[in-house]
Figure 1 (tube, rainbow, N blue to C red):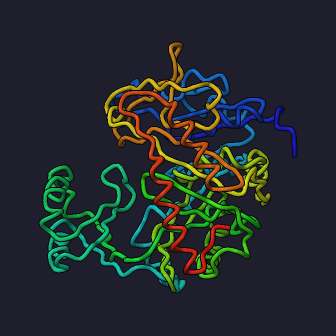
Figure 2 (cartoon, rainbow, N blue to C red):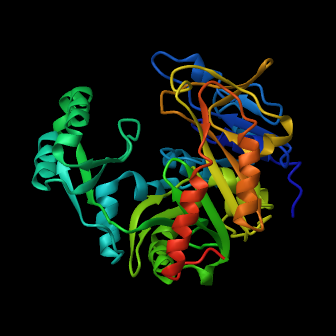
Figure 3 (cartoon, one colour):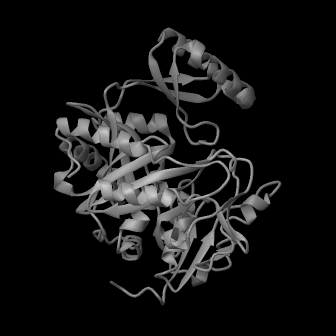
Length: 419
């Protein structure tokens, strides 16, 4: 593997994947980290985010170092045009470019998936809050999943099981959206009972996928378990969905991590949500588990696909949350020996310790990860670490392990085996 000590890299991130800069600090000669902070009223919670770590240098913008950077990395969304500009300047760029459209513009993406004969759950597009209310009422107490495009801060996907159960939430949305409430598009998907979330957690270089990746099952907002498999060992119907999107990804010159969340039943599989970026959970685990990540990023940004070298067969990740951190800075304490296995969001290193800066985006503050030759070994390691992480109202969802194991048992009866 190439020695990157003479190379420089700049990570352009919104705060969730500051841990990537820490990880790459061990391989690259110079690592810059930029997180956008400009606003009409800038917040110190944004300007301090990512400060104080020895592994990299936080910068206020990329323009002062643009000539010095060999590789730009964009883990997240909404900077496709900047990525294309940098690529035209001859820079290596790891990112989704405008392939992010397959995730952020839901209605158009669903129409495109349909044109490729990719199976999806039945859905309805409701234009405006009045139409949304009417449609939910028309479905009586059916379980429905409601999604919006682009602005995830307005709302993540939420569930409705009858109008009365969701009316207060819709009232709140309408008040907050104000005059835009009648112009918003809501994607309302039917629930698919007796199914589980599965994904091939991988990356894509100009429409090509590596020869092996993680097959993963997520317990929503709690935990994740994955097993390394060769491409030919993944569920054929899932592989078919990925490969149908390959030409579009090639056209976008997509060079980033990639996952298609699929709802998996006994006999069928449906595309649910494409993740055209680094995903959380799983990327925190991949940071810890992939031996040759610097080479993958360096060569992939230049259009060359490098296969991953995994340190173990299985991986397990649990999320860390604190209700306190949504509104307040949070000091986190843990033994130094576990530092590499605790991946934080929105972190800043001050002289008195590591703090999580509040972003008012919910209680998630990080993950604990482990790899090994059995799921039980991974779970035991994560549980040991979780017991040592201290801070106000911090909770580690180690109980997700038992839920995930039950999921895997059921999936095995359908021929999807984590082995």
